[in-house]
Amino acid sequence: MKKIGLLLILGLFVFAALPCFSQDVMESTYAQTTASYTNYKSCIRLYKLPAQKLYFLALSSVNANKFEILEMQSRSGYILFEADDKEFLLDVMSKDKNYTYIKLTPADNNYYFSPTIPQKIFNYIDVNFNLEVKELKF
Image (cartoon, rainbow, N blue to C red):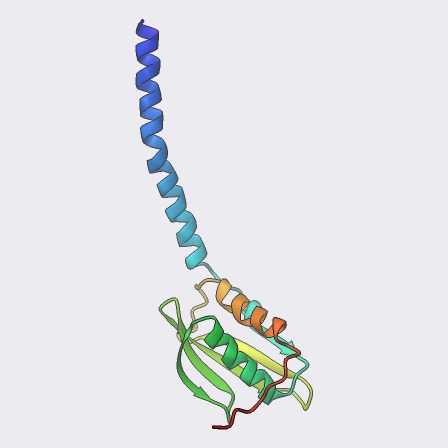
């Protein structure tokens, strides 16, 4: 009878401790994915596209990922936007007629942010690489 009572108390203790443990694990995992170090090499890419087309693809990528656009300038090729309560600068730099660099830089130059931000931007550009850019006239 003592063994049954002891096993019952031990079982209740284990079942009571499991939700607390799993909550701590989930919170630490979430904290790691939301703010971890991002390598600067994963924030720059070279595309075989003209600079103007890549700028428009980058602008639509920022918009499609629901990041807040703070400022943009097509002549110099930069987009300032906010994601995860941090500001980022997206530069489109022409190498020559056919090749263009795109570079994502945090405004505070601190690369301690989620690596999914550049992944989302570059994935959108990769998927829509061959789409035609059309001018809308109102």
